[in-house]
Image 1: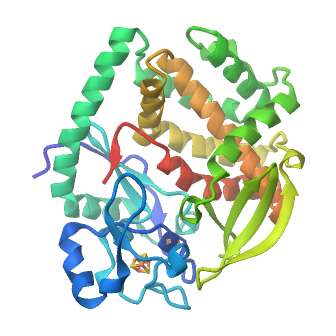
Image 2: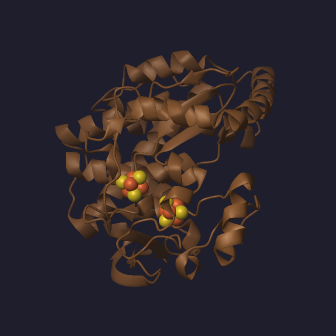
Length: 372
Ligand code: SF4
Ligand code: SF4
């Protein structure tokens, strides 16, 4: 019997299917849990490897050490489907743990955008039941981290009511898709002790060059890596896997082949990739996504992480609104990047594609809780 609360609001009413020939999630090297190692040690010892980075764990090997999982065949089907790891089975669901559990969805998965498939709520409940032991332990650990954060934030006088912040944002979702509004929020978050959303309005004057500089800086920060394992992947409409690297302001577009090889596709000057105001359809798609982000505990956890990393100097309202505005700029710049290479535009299609490109990175942002 679970002794923690589970928030299913993000999955309620949604459907999820897996698209044949996609395989995008098989580019995310899955961890192999202790109870799963025996199968791989016995049957595929060469495919069990140590992950890189500070948090060492056992994972499945990737083709050429950087492509998809070695078990993904040329038709992009899993060759060990019945023995795939827990994390393979869970995708695109993520179980985020704070002092309770929140089930979140990875909107980079195209199978969540078709409106078809199984009932996501029932599937999520089964996953939570299967992960019960791990969740119990994780909730215990994360609760202690959250308690410490609240104590520190209150002592520093930077804590605010997160439910009120979320409620305020939910009343202004479409405003957050307006460049004038975003510009004002960002400048207030920088100079004012406490941001009040009523100080920003749609249609405020803004400097497009300044916003472009900020958007480029934010997006390039997440794209700039030489490590192929850390490169954000964009699974395009044709199901090709695409990565972008940045060198001296030059963006290179490459595809990742099914064999793990990278193939050059094109270059663009980062300065020439420019955000633009969204049309009504683009704004609607973005506002819906911001509603999801605003409800995510992992988003709030990432804002808490920032406050902690900055020494408890920023008020929660500044950090929260500022993070949301920065997320919008990142998405808009990615929309501009995809438009440059794929002609996806700034309407509903372009913003949907940018979210598909962005959401996996968003869920990877450091947070004070943990995904289980
Ligand atoms: S990303 Fe989604 S649609 Fe693609 S293979 Fe994974 S679960 Fe299936
Ligand atoms: S084990 Fe199968 S489902 Fe999991 S990453 Fe590898 S190919 Fe994909």
